[in-house]
Amino acid sequence: MLLAGLAVAALAAAPASAAAAAVAETPVVFVTFDELPTTSLLDRRGDLDGRRFPGFAAFARTSTWFAHTTTVADGTRWAAPVVIGGRYPDRRRIAAWFDYEPNLFTLLERTHRVHAIEPMTRLCPPRLCGRALPGSRRAQARTLTELIPRAKHDAARRSAMARWIQTIRPWRRGKPPLYFIHALMPHHPWVWMPDGRRYALPTPGIPGLFGDNMWRRDQRAVDQGWKRHLLQTGYTDLLLRRLMARLRAVGLWDRALVAFSADHGVSFVPGSSRRSATPRTVGGIAPVPFFLKAPGQRTPQRVDDHVETIDVLPTLAAALGLPQAPEWDGRPVVPGYRPKPRVDLWSTTSVVTFGRHTYSLAYVRREAARVAARQHAKFGTGPLRGPFWANPFTPTHR
Image (tube, rainbow, N blue to C red; front, side, top):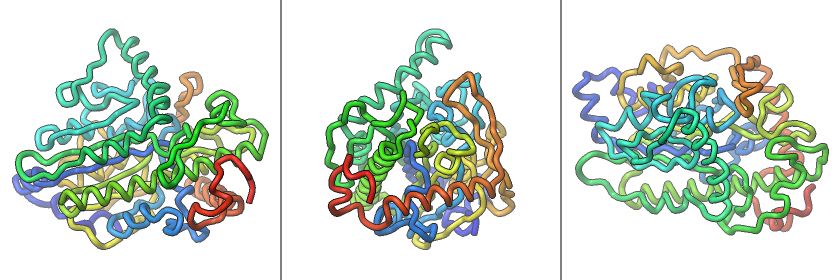
């Protein structure tokens, strides 16, 4: 069932004045998670593992789950702008507002007060968020690249999303808020336990990883990384639960459009890249979650059509009754949406190998099922509790 079943979908067919009035009364909350594959969230049946990740399952019970969403880029510098910019990766673009207009922020700047946390991009223009990129275009690109290690360093010390949740306030008058965060969760550095406790990074931070991208052929070390990723995904689930509780506490939950997605996934295949999409790794990197809760929505829905991350922004716009921008490559998931039978995924982790690679949708789904099966064989399903999960480093096998 497509977006027509959502409570705000009727706005798309409403007169422009009515749609504008409704948009001006709708708070928007959007989270882009980082390095979160859909496969990490699934049980043996291919459904959300509600016992392991009760927050994601609870959100799904009151939202629309686009269950077969795939990313179009394997690196954050292009994958994150795609989600809120609706455009395919282009080597000539940098992750700044002037290369992705209109985007989520500029789309809503006249109707909403923007509160944005962007640790690795600058898609919110200075007129809204007050952070310019001085210098030449080359200097601007260098500044954006330098944000990445800084963001990872900060993520190892404190939880930006936990602090951001506390900034959400009641709204009674004036422009409604747009709350946005690009959360480096469950992206490495993996330092968080499911209950929010932080443990010390080992040396090296990810044993078995060569540099930041390539796994060595050490199965036990790769499995240890996978285990730590799942533990941090448990903390990500806790943060999602806290977000839902906060929105209810301040009176925004029923009034707001709340959505989240992820920029890309991650792979745990010995001798292969952790992040670069290849035929061996695409099953862990391509599938990403996308959920959207309309104001007042209480009935869960599931969309099984193939959706791409370029479709996220157009779908949000349709849910708010806003027109589609001709600059967007994505399409809203509404009646008449025609899913692609292929997965277009740009290799973006290196400018040398930058380019589009195409996989059949059937192949990506088979590979994702293999990833899920390996995960269940190694780590089971159900709560991340007990002796096996108590220590992030040992043992590495059940």
